[in-house]
Image 1 (spheres, rainbow, N blue to C red):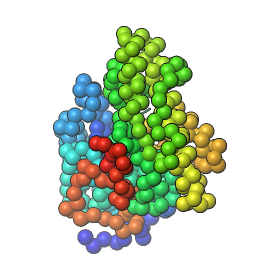
Image 2: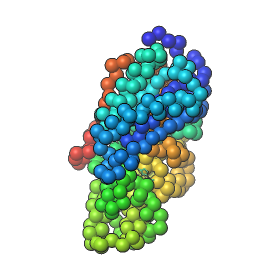
Image 3: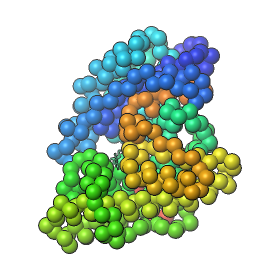
Image 4: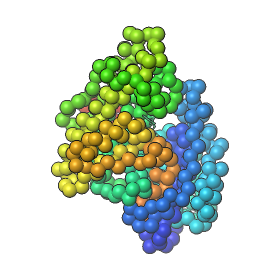
Length: 368
Ligand code: KG4
Ligand code: ZN
């Protein structure tokens, strides 16, 4: 497709599309220059209601729900931005990692649009979109240290540049969001679990239960959450039937253990980052779990104590959204990174392709 290079135009206008899990989203961003982005529209439709009775995301229901509303959501995003498809410089879409049915819905729609209006396609890695969000919200540009905490991933990464990621640590079992979701489920708090646990924890006693702090003090900044979740289950079984106060205290104690572990692992990664990134001292947190208040506060204290600045997206852009996809797409587009019409949907797509599997990683160990 012969098009004027987007990097020569200002602003660069990109439509983003996100369908990798249970949010159908479309957004438009304008990129005025490095670290200078404007969010022109941001439409997110959550499918929580459709999945709630199954207490988790059902892939086929998710894919069908994306098909039903994606067209409308894209139209809403364009209208809100006051732009037509013809005025865009490119269309960015999450191509992975995620649930394959949903990814195919978004990718096929994006391909049809790019073909119809002769615009470049940018196939975006969902994790890269989370990783670069602070560029849009605060103008923070790589390099920086990133804690990525979502439903499927828990990683510490050095973000050297757009497209250049080095994994320092990962979970050897459950992702942190998964641990929140499973804890919520076993306490009967329903789905999605993270916000439910956080609500209950608010008035609970974080010191009532001495839950384990897995991986604390270990040399490499890896994580493990399966044992913590099991410890909550054991406590819950020992106390059954649970009073509301017990549930609040269990949630608060769980969050306190999580915060201690995450702070310890981040402190370790900060020391590595100081050697590797020199004077740059940004700690960036992204992904759905970054919305957690106790975690944000604990990391703010850590950053302040170690001379780092903490950067976390506003709550609305922590969970899945298309603004981050549009922004990552714009960042790639201005660097000349576009994708062909046969770009594949990828259920697995590690940010650091060279990271080795973690010993003892079990089923999720290779999760990147
Ligand atoms: O990034 P995200 O929206 O989707 C994925 O890419 O996975 O993350 C979703 C995860 C879920 O596990 C959800 O329970 C968790 O983020 N989450 C939270 C909070 N809000 C969402 N976990 C803890 N506290 C929260 N406030
Ligand atoms: Zn996500």
